[in-house]
Length: 243
Image 1 (cartoon, rainbow, N blue to C red):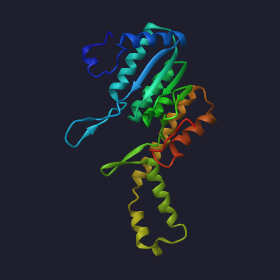
Image 2 (image 1 turned 180 degrees about the horizontal axis):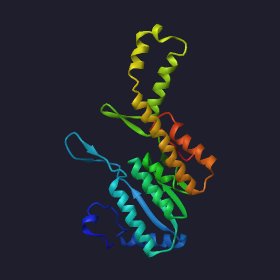
Image 3 (image 1 turned 45 degrees about the vertical axis):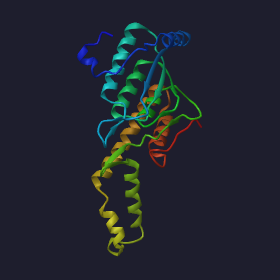
Image 4 (image 1 turned 90 degrees about the vertical axis):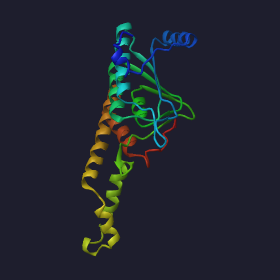
């Protein structure tokens, strides 16, 4: 591929090397006058210690991989239609946004195929499509950012909702007259966490609007979709299906 060995070590990008499959993919490419690309993450994580497992996700190496692929595509062909297969349980939002933006700036038309799951960062990648093709078992997910909370993570929406819930407790009662349980809940609300949660939700909506505008959607439609997919679902795990 002409990439330096030192860079190759952190780039996970390959052309299909199975002769039979490569021939079939070439036929599809010629038939649709399109470039074919796939981002596929394994379902199973890699156990790196007796108690720790890491899962594949969109990250730094994938950023370099997609950049390398785009550079090669631009060198080899003038075709600017992409058939893009995405199957990923998630990934870093920053990396997913950068990859989505790069693809959207490179190709005039993108058709995304989601055979099973494109969640979290995978959903952001899927939104690059002028068209998203899904099946009965395919799913996308909400794009509400996740924030660290203790040893785990919690949705930014949950932080904001919790603050609003506590605030409503004091709608009809003075702080001085409120029961201890109300005050205890209020004391647990961290203003910095709330500010960060609101900022991350707003930023995610901006990312989505930018990608959708590059797809050709109107500003009004972009605003509606971004608000819905960031703030309109109950939990981060809610399934967005073909319907």
